[in-house]
Image (cartoon, rainbow, N blue to C red; front, side):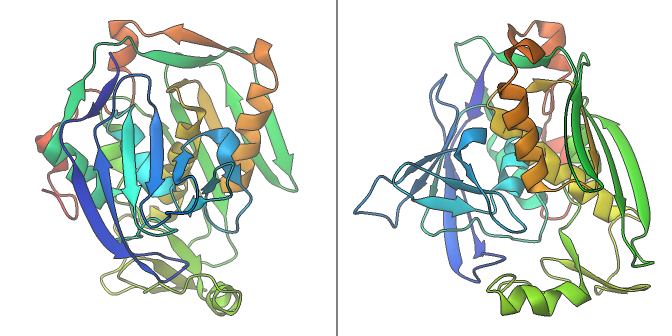
Length: 310
């Protein structure tokens, strides 16, 4: 069955790129609603923005959604990953600014808040997007690909010159709470050489190394307390990928492979998929299928050991 959050949960913080303080609240929604954002600070235009692949607007270093009235909300990927990873299919997200707060740089605070409130089943059957044949997009040496599979699998490879990052690869079946246990607390990261450039271009204005981002410089990790995982960067890229893939609007049954891929390439992959109707089918979910989806069976016990656990 489709789900929504049982009761509202709110978060406050700073936007990573804008540096603007913002508050958002996840509200329950009815079946077949999907995920929507409502800009409560917008009063002279349509404030509703769909969390959907075809509402994505090109933006550097994040995923930005925009509606027909050019009202937007950015850096939605960590929140979207949390909703998908907790199995929430319908929600209204009220936000009083243009960017989702970065919090600690991961999805863990969102996950803790959602799980603390609980997920409610709705009286409507759940459907999934089943990948039937390979779809692939490339840009330079970056690749994003979807292949047929019976459940959602993520396979990601990154390769950086900085020795503290280097080459990392990880593969996960996203069933049995894998997102909550393995990915949700992996934080966003960047290279020190990129920080000044980003800030000169009006980005990363709310970034605070150690508080909401991990910064690398060659073989150094500029983060008090070090990493949460030895391969935290690739785990975070997988977190981002889940958030971006959730914009397909249905849970995906397929294997996603990302090789040096980012937000833009994953969105291009979804656009390529939907441009090829023979490559997918929307199918009803049996009980066995639902049990394999991200978020199935998650409860408070799964938060043990996570930062910001409720």
